[in-house]
Amino acid sequence: MKVRIDCTLDIDKKIIKTYIDDLGSEESIKEFIVTNIVTAGILSLDESLKNAIGEDHNIALVKWDLGAGVG
Image 1 (cartoon, rainbow, N blue to C red):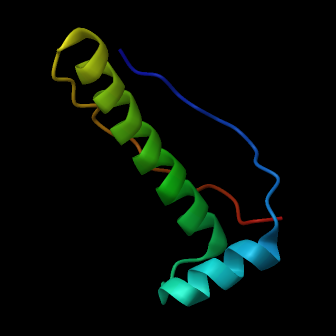
Image 2 (tube, rainbow, N blue to C red):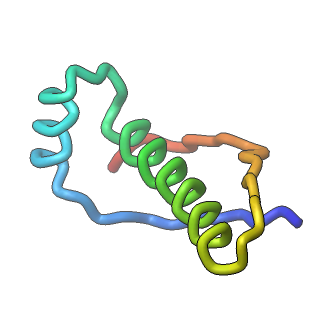
């Protein structure tokens, strides 16, 4: 089953940029936010399933589209 997730987040650009700079990352703010939310969500769901029902589950990221830039 494929599930498409489309959302808009309201972030504090200055705080996120400071954090990205502190990490030494060269990602744009949008790339950083999307990468972190998607990967953390995938790992969290897979781990929750394992802990709850004992089943190994590996979500496969089918399509990666950063779309338009940060507004």
